[in-house]
Length: 371
Image (cartoon, rainbow, N blue to C red; front, side):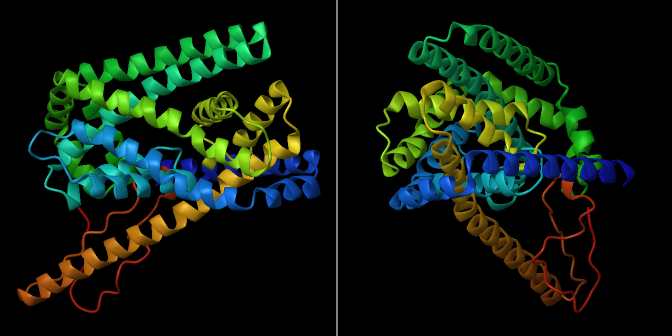
């Protein structure tokens, strides 16, 4: 509990610092000017919201091959789980990992795949996503250097790629050497619930991860879809710039997208990358000669999109969880036994301690238990 409280305090501290930085950037660029640019976007805001369905679909396509053949969930189901997971990462202080743990749990519960297979698929999917993001971000630096003739960008690009490559290489080595059981044990201690039972099956989880990597063709497909998804994400920027009347090409959109995603990953401990994402937009805007108020308007459009896409996803998730819990209770009561409710909170250190989901139904009979 003490460890969970410390992590919670750190999450809220970083959120406060990010908020302060965000407000300072907004004031610096001029609140009135930024909101004037935002109003000119008009239909672009709706376009950015609707367009987000495409990158999420591409992410689901990259996730699906990592499940065992014959046990792969439907694409629409994975798309929904990816939507929920991304929304939790964007809107809840979970250090960009709680949403991934959540989609692993959802896949284990609502599909025919075993829990260990679902978690293994997510672990390898995360690895493929991070690996392709390193390539994507490095490509963005090269693109910026070509567009702005700023040779000074070479050093930070090489340094960033080197550090990222070492980090992803270390994570991959841990997986290949059977270290996932220790990661699962750590998550089980912090998150509780079903994750504790998963930690007890660490050897089985290690075997599941290795079996995924043994299917090299499926891993390559996952990485390819992930890279396409990163590139497609620039479409949102392109739509917003066009809506604001800026003569933007796909190169400019990619520059904004690569830097913002790279900055977000580098400071994953700041909830929602609040302030950091805006700083990345202003950094790119300064190099490309885009007015600061336009860059801040772009950042606000993304924030609006995150809220418009994320809030319905979280509500839908809570409705589904609540319905499942009611069905468990009714089935137990119909069998004449105690109603055993198995809550599954978001496995997030920042949200500890959590005892049951928001929409868990009130217990009127029987006694609830946790794993």
